[in-house]
Image 1 (tube, one colour):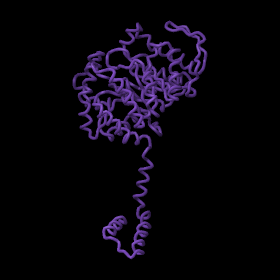
Image 2 (tube, helix red, strand yellow; image 1 turned 90 degrees about the horizontal axis):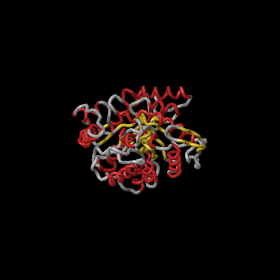
Image 3 (cartoon, one colour; image 1 turned 45 degrees about the horizontal axis):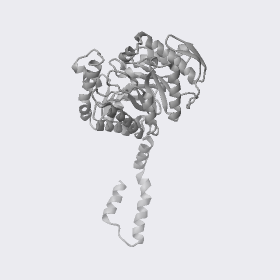
Image 4 (spheres, helix red, strand yellow; image 1 turned 180 degrees about the vertical axis):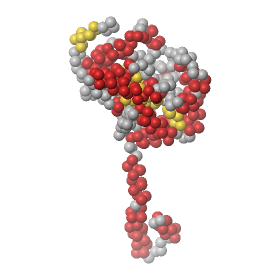
Length: 396
């Protein structure tokens, strides 16, 4: 089983904001969340692109990345994802290279065919063409990133001796990843081009048990294309919420999860309902579709993900408004303080140092106690009883 020396953590920010909320405030809060995560030393934030249905309000992840890059220090910022069939590939490649420079190499490029059917419908794009167009576009964009001159005539875009005037800031180019949700298109396309994979469908019913086969498809596609892939560039996406107790964590999100499932996925997108009981956070957590509880519960759940998948390089929280803003921030703080260090080795040395001192305290502190006793003796003063008792306890 593959296990990275430092597992990456971040968020996948679609975002999900309940319809009827002030969109200006909601988008501003999205940027504030990224700033909060940067202070907590989270590794990544991937921002979505959507154009309809009233919940996922960000139309241009590049604008959010540009804004957040100015107010954060180290967190990496990616499109999560750019819907390639909606854009001319040259223009999108040009914008992303500019972002690579503006972020000083912190930009990442997540791509997909377009998740919302209503977006494609408004643009007059037929659903059966989207995955093929994604692959066509990605092929061109990667060639442009590499500095090639591209001529291509397709049914939906034309390029004539096209080349980028800016070389990527990141060498050879920024991190690229393909969204993998339900169909084989994600793992096979990412494998074919030798890029990373964002398993957005991991939290969906049946998603966990398919993780191993998803990687097999990804790896086989890479083998057939003569490219190489790494589990370190495989990110799983999973909703999570933590609190100080398991009971409090479930109580924090119970109402928000029902709204998310019933009002958005069922009421708006028309996803078939599995019944009110299956829409609860208890049902989602039981089948592995969410991580809810304490930091210890999260650590156990991640260990289980390693076993089911065979290993991966990053875990992204599916950002949401399930809980209040204050409780959401507290959840990320608990994750940063107690979950991330377990998988990143950040506290190994401090724990080892404490254990070493505890095991060797008699040897370490005995000379100090003798020196204190001598100082009192040289001064002709008796050592206070309380200090004698404390020194005796220290020797036990």
